[in-house]
Amino acid sequence: MNARVLAVFGSTLLIAACRKGAAPPPPAPTVQVTVVIQQDVPVYREWVGTLDGFVNAEIRPQVTGYIQKQVFREGTFVQEGDLLFLIDPRNYKDSADQAKSTLERNLASLAKAQLDVKRDKELIAEQAITRQQYDNDLAAEREAAASVASSRAALSQAQLSHGWTRVTSPISGIAGIVQVQVGDLVTTANTMTTVSQVDPIKVQFNISEVEYLRSAQGNRWVEAGESAEPTLQLILADGSVYSRRGLVIVINRQVDQRTGTIAVQGSVPNPGNVLRPGQYAKVRAAINTRKNALLVPQRAIVEVQGASQVGVVGSDGKVDIRVVKTAEQVGPLMVIENGLSAGDKVIVSDLTRLRPGMPVRAVPASDSTTASAEPATGGSSPRGQ
Image (cartoon, rainbow, N blue to C red; front, side, top):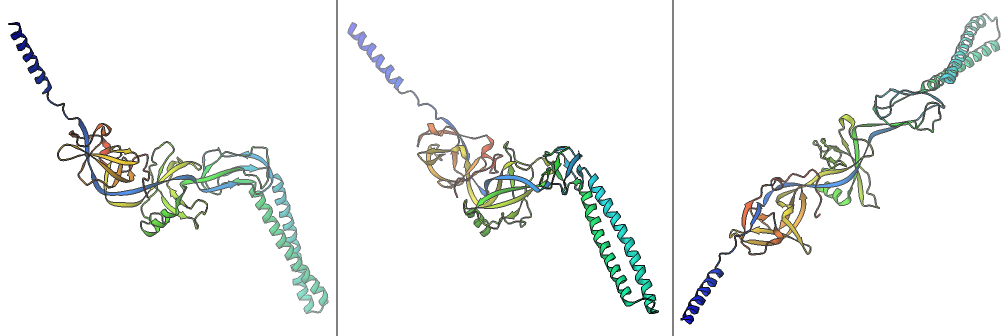
């Protein structure tokens, strides 16, 4: 009886163990996917640029003297012709007054000499004077006329020097910090301040010889004055994109043999004078357009031993790991040269934990990085030439 009970109990345990081993498999993991986009995209490049005033006028005195007054406020906008400094004018005023007196004396001498010659013409006709006296008076008239011309030039120079004691701005722009003070003795060698025209402002950057040749052969974005639409975009030091675009205005005449680059200058509108000379900014421009490019989010790509891999969910709902060749980055998206086709569903989440052939449940990705091929705020960087 005990043996029969043990046999029944053993059979029950065996049946329970078999039922436990037949438990259903775990559900397939959920992954986010996005469809490979195919469209024309601009190819952007970035270069480090330096901002500079469109015109930088170093204010130097034209005469020597002591600074009597500083009229403007540093760092403010000044108009062309505005008074900046006043140099002690007394010596130059005295010189001008003396030159004026000399001119008046010479004019009087010239008037007398002219009267003598006029009278001599009447007397010599009556043979009341000798020919030599007439010639002497004629020479005196010419000498007086020369003295008048010389004194006029001296007066003009004295008045010019007197005027130069008022140091004015030759351009409209932002006045820099003053390098001299009231009471200083200045000469023509001193730089008093600098005035910079900053609207528009100039940006200079260097492109490679290869980029220049490509632009000359195809997309002529770098030609000065040829583009009716501004092509240059500035990315400032804080990462923000400047709201106004600029135009290429100058291409240097030669390639720098030390660096293999050629200097390019652009003009950027700067209302409000927000941008200042000396700032650094990245210069971004679309140098080409890639036709029918295949685009996937950058985060869908995983680097494994130097190879770029992308996970694709096939029509059977299983994972397929593909090796792809990447090209340019366009904002948050990456151009794929081969390895994918338009309409493929690429995985943008948890690719590292997936294996080829693994069944998954695909759901559309909802984040904004899969929706646009426009360049991101921070710019684009080349991933291949």
